[in-house]
Length: 187
Image (cartoon, rainbow, N blue to C red; front, top):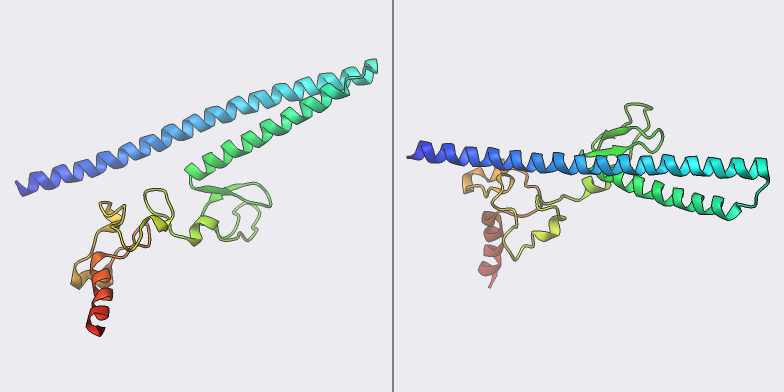
């Protein structure tokens, strides 16, 4: 029965990972659809703005309020489009070069298009937990929220040196106990 249980466990892990990937692909598809809608809306607003400016030039009509209104709408739609594009980049684990606008892997040190040295990505400085929160969700007084994940397997005493890096900065139970024992001895 051990082989079958191990096989089922492995299959469950594969199915869970496939489900997470499917969710990610679905989310990216939804965001791309939003992006296309916003780009179409932006193109329509630019067209209206062009017509209004041309009408003002040719007919010397006083439509400055319309032009200002369209300018405001364009600014709002561009801001919304930027937010959606940033969400897409986040889902794909990409960032944008501040110099040329190229999409790059988040961990890139230099832009592959223009060669600009990139600052360390803000989310690379602090470890994140697999639950999506920063590592503060793994309070030392409570069990780690991700201890059932493969990255958070608690090592045996003789494997402590070979401990996997967890997705958060939680400490294995064996390390917590080792730290608390000297305090008991001191008393």
